Length: 155
Image (cartoon, rainbow, N blue to C red; front, side, top):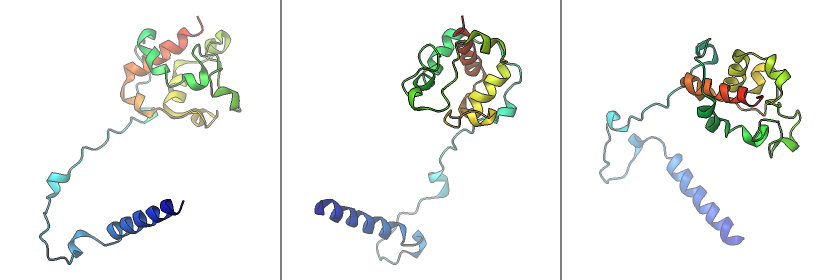
């Protein structure tokens, strides 16, 4: 235990020394510093997800077999068959939607599914535990395939 505390203190002092020393131009050491130009340090920006509103209103028909892998992220809560009985569902209130319910599926439009998938449960007044998946907005075909797979759960 004492070893852990000592190691933690050493690491904190080291990080503080590195992080709190000011900018590189204030370095007072006599050793030469390798200067790196700004062009050498450019990092490609992470692609931004398309806002929900900018994803095509009408999606091309999707392919359920291509959408099944994307549904893998949903299985923990919605379950393998989409019945809302995934491993995490037992501890959740409200329970995840039963996506295999034919009556519910008949009353919900693809636009709604798109909105809840991209924006998460809170965007439609549902559970904040359902995460947003805005990255799918950058791939409308993958989104259409996922929706087709969700639709296939009621068959």
